[in-house]
Length: 395
Image (cartoon, rainbow, N blue to C red; front, side, top):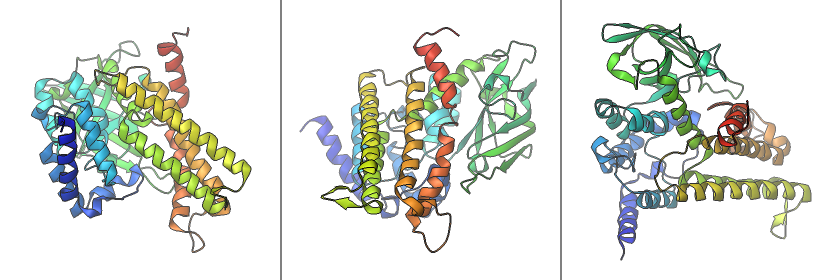
């Protein structure tokens, strides 16, 4: 038996034994993840996976990661998918600030923050967008002034996903207001559990409040939590966005499995609500829409799989992540729209006895999907990046 086969057998046995039944076969939107993880079963699962280092399986063991190579990490993902195990932890710590610290952080910063991400005990949020600095992020005005060993931060952030549940924030702040627009910006980390930080959730049309306004009124960040050089945070901030877009775009085997599962769900919905004839969707127009969407999803999944396999370094690609964010977010929006359309009038329900749970979820998911082409950088921003940084077109 090869090393990979041995690892698969051992992993399968461990997961079967240690993954609580309550953490299997779960379906939830990322906005509600805090509810899923705030249970006794979730805590047990998190502790067991953290002990193995499998919350961050490819991160170095010295920071609490699993130290797995890409092949073994893929096997772990496959075996978790086989029993439909929910990830033991999730969020911006794993997908955004963690990878950024691994690339830009000092050893002291890595030792201070990464272990808490690897054991799932600290939750993070992103302090980027402001009321006057959304797509034009470099227009941000939140100020940070050095006083001794601290930054005193004043300003407002908006669309701060999960801020009401976060312990820490990574933020872009202006440390030199006299510098050029893209200069004078620094990348800092700050504790959200201080009186100078006020968080107000923003109600959305979908009925949930994953996004927040965050007010910083002389909030404190430690000088030791400046990532990179003073006034050179724009480069680090852009790199973090590439990590974010990589995740949204689906550059992982687990993401591809989810896409395949969702595609099958769409076909099943069509057969249930439109009708089935000889194993096929009865209505030709609906069948054509499902077929086109399925082919596009599968082509996208094959492309992301090829990119992952060809990326021998294991590092997140640069500007090309915008391609995957653009296509992935558009597909997600289209999938939600198609599901509601196939359900007909049953896909338009908000509440009431006349609707099943999955039908009400379809309506909310359709409304939520309007945001996926905006957060992480709008589709228009992604097209600009692709044109300039990938295709080399003139401004």
